[in-house]
Image 1 (cartoon, rainbow, N blue to C red):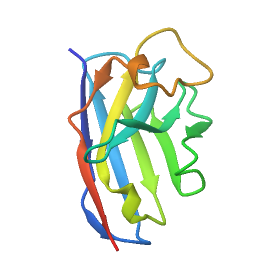
Image 2: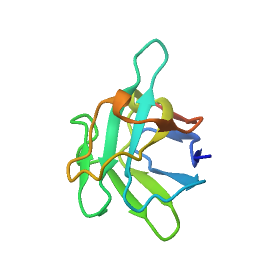
Image 3: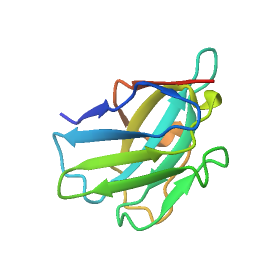
Image 4: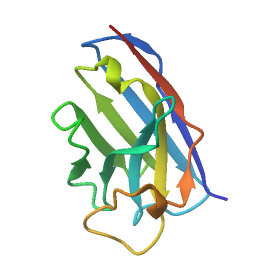
Length: 127
């Protein structure tokens, strides 16, 4: 079955950078939409970034635009999130998500559009 495994989360100081990775297995993902969401304590899971099957353009939440970059490698079935200029408010568990539905040029941003999820990786940004 489809499995997503995230890695790369850790404690970092404000202003620092991190790169999260997500490896997908158990299926064919070249046509899939892939995304990152995050959930801070006491808050709902929120959209961070997504990339369509072409892997050409990323789509971002306003809160991370200009600081985060999503990319994918279809040959390796991976999606990454480069996070720069991190802020304490970026502290959350970050989840990789996958939509295996019909190929979409514009990725969805709603969490209920994604059927498959990883277990999450903790990112903590200290001030």
